[in-house]
Image 1 (spheres, rainbow, N blue to C red):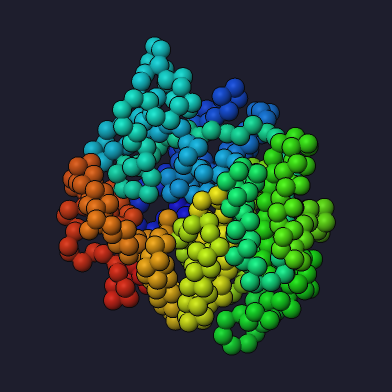
Image 2: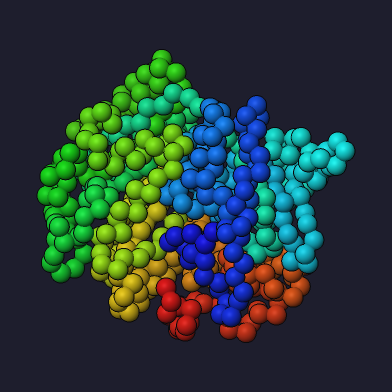
Length: 461
């Protein structure tokens, strides 16, 4: 649908490309199976549409939605996006694909490759992911090897749920918070993929402009953040943990007891329920997202600057306090260098966490666009030197990020190029996607690495 906000949208990588719009007419929910708790969708089905179609059936099923519900269910999964219920790993919870290959032929993966009775779709296509032989679904995620036109997904049976937030008073509580999250997540006590957000996010999601709190030079000062959040319902805090538990009343109560006990080790931490906060507080948006209801509240922070646009920097880091501190310090230091405010959001699992740094810039300012690009390029390189790689990036930085995955002399890139050349020998489908170039383009200066790679593409950011 072209709504990959923060990662390049619908822009093609090569000027003069023909853009295929799959969202306008290929927008059907092809199947909803209540007994199997699954569905099959086309690329143009948004989270809002899938939610509405399930509501029409009356089935007690949830979808898993990312922070913004306007994008494609299929597209987000193909780009390995995440949500926040127990089904939050969207690609891991897909089941079955139909793909148009570059030569125009059709491929079905998983059990869909076996015809059902009398030529019908296989009845287990949405039930079992792999089938016989190599599992090939993964090569069609974040790639340019085919166009996925149908995709199955597992849906979550409706259940009881309780969202909550825990606040922490000091910036230097950060490492201890991460250390507490890890065993809770590994033991399955945390019900979902929780978010850990810095207090500046509390200001941004009010939807009020930056000038409400600060109109001075340079990036947003820490003491001004502190004074700002003092005026909000959460009070004087530095970090906020948003979580949700699932199950019946007794199991949720038991889980929350363990969680409260663990975080009580941090002096001054406070546990709050949605009922403790006013109706316009951001936590009520988290309640909806974490119970499968799509929303758009997260876009409110685009009021932070005039003419606001954004880029996401999204490295993967071990769930370890010391590692979290290393990446946080890199991001904070470089944001200060290029004069941008830092908006840290960490999606923390038991073994890894997605550190999502949101660069908000004035898209009418050539200077801010230049500084945003330079900031991204330097963060990519510094994080990679620590072994922290982006899991997803804006198309301007695809070549640079692909180059950081350089083990074995670039073995992964060579393998991807081999697949590209075999499946798409003429290089017609999305050349340059994820840094994968067909042989007709390689070595001819198409790669964008560093600000020396200026031109019409970079200027459009």
